[in-house]
Length: 116
Length: 112
Image (cartoon, rainbow over all chains, first blue to last red; front, side, top):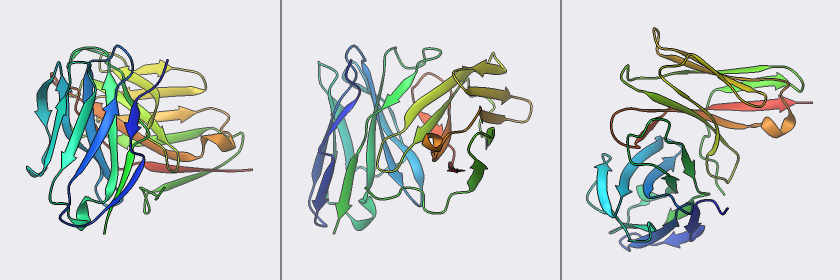
C-alpha cells in the first residue's frame, strides 16, 4: 500500500510569489495534517483536515491556507512568500477521526521549499 | 535535501550497544505519544507509539517507556545498528484532534 505522497518534492520560489503543495494520504485515511519543519523552529503544526473540514489550525499567519477534497487529498497554499517560509513542509495522514485513541499518524517525505 | 536539525543534541553509541533517547513532554493532559525517526532528506518515519494508560510498550528492538509523574518519555533501541543513525523525535497528542507537539529531536550517531 502506498504511503503518504507529496508533490512537488523540491521547489524554488521568489519572494512575493505563492506556492501550492499537494498531498495524497494513505488509501483509506481521511485525516490529513500539515507541518512545517525548519532548523530553528523544529516541527510545527500548521492545520488539520477531516472530511473536507479544517478541524484545527496552528499559529501561522493567514498567508498559510489549505483545503481537503472529497477524495481526502489535500493542498496547502502559501501566498506572498517570505524568505522565512523556506522549510520542509510535511503532510501526515491517519485513519480515524481526530481524537481517536491510538490514531497512528504517518508522514510523507515532504516538499522542500526554498524562497529566494 | 537540507539538514533540518543542525544543532541538535547528539547521542553517540557504538554499534551493538543499547541506546536510550529521552524526551520531556509538556502537557500533562496528553494521551498519546509517538516516536519518529527522521533520516536526512526524508520525512519522519513512525517507530512506536504508546497511550497514556500504559507505561511500557515493546516493538522490534525498540521499547518506549512513559513516566507520567514526571512527564518523561524514553525510547530504548537494542543492539543499535548503523542504520539506526538518524534524528529521533518524540511527539505528544492531546484532546480531540490529531495535532502533534514535537520535541526538539535527538541525533543518534552509531559508530562501528
